[in-house]
Length: 285
Image 1 (tube, rainbow, N blue to C red):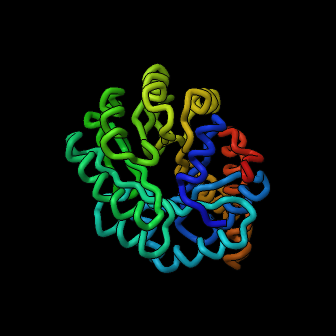
Image 2 (cartoon, rainbow, N blue to C red):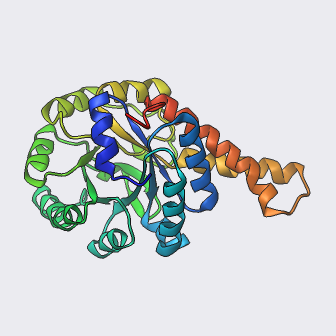
């Protein structure tokens, strides 16, 4: 069933678990994620970057997800990840996205607040949830590229001001994660996370750049109040690794056969993340 981000994240916040937000670019990735969520009976967030929309086409993505959500027995959210322009966000709302992110993290605090309020005014009137970001993650994800020297952690005091003035539905914070593939082992600032959550307990917290984070750190993050966890790179790696292995050992040229092991590999990754996030069996929470 099609639901908003607020629908699943408010429940996750009350239940002290996280919902997986998995990036999609094509039908096979979408099918793998839905299959995993169905098997685990977990709510799921399907994310599209601006790059994915450009690649697949907004009409194609909207139609595919609509079919998947209508057939699914679990709650399904269609979310715009890192919306950087007003026009893109409005277009996603028009085509049926049930959740959008306005990424004003590169702006001064007051400008980020103003930009977020502009989006919320329209989105909430249309029944669409809004996520915003405070602080900046380093790394690369599609059209988002932030050098390490420009990354900055989220200020707890600014988080309080931001939520109070915008009424945002969920807040992505920077505590040491990064987009893309990690070069080393990331060190998360759990004390900062705990402080922010204590100050804004009713606001679901979002963790970006979670691919490659050690399992024990993910579990600790959810216990300290993270309610949405973004995964992209781990799915891409499972997809490409499975295809490379299949092509190296088979002379099959049927795309359906080539894609089959990739879909199974992605499903396995998503199921593992759902289990890690504590959302197994929470479809009817």
